[in-house]
Image 1 (cartoon, rainbow, N blue to C red):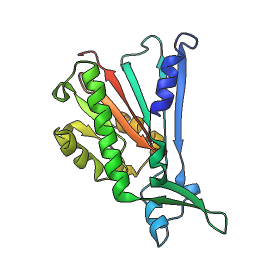
Image 2: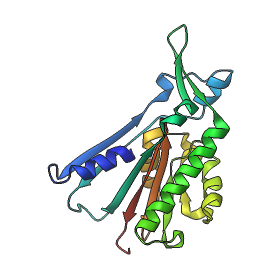
Image 3: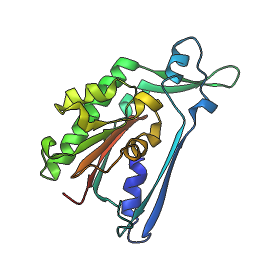
Length: 203
């Protein structure tokens, strides 16, 4: 989703409006069953989200995207693997602990880098919206950043890991837009990761 957001911003001069759609339907491919692959499949949920990126604000809920940063480290690609069984089914293999440590550090670096680049302290942020690999991530990430848990947002605990849809779903689940700047951050297979700084009317 962050990659699509970055691309939409680069296309603003040629395409004044870009619709981003994120769809995740792992239940079509991953079976919840006994064993490590089945336990990994159980972490994921089905979901979809969409947003419109425009060169000019449209509507009272429009919010400015100040910047999107992306990064990747192919040497860690083996932490998330997909294999095919003899029957043709897909199995997901996660190296849980090293993946969680890598994800936490990568998202933390991305949040700090983006905040510092825009002369912000973490205390200046109205919130951090994160892609969570599992329901424990928000509390662990809040501790990693030294931020109050109420300012770190994720819906993974109730929806499961929604992949590319996780950030916009977490955003849309808020009853009201947070005042001031917020950062979205996520880690995906590859490993790839990134962060986006959004500025509200008060920032």
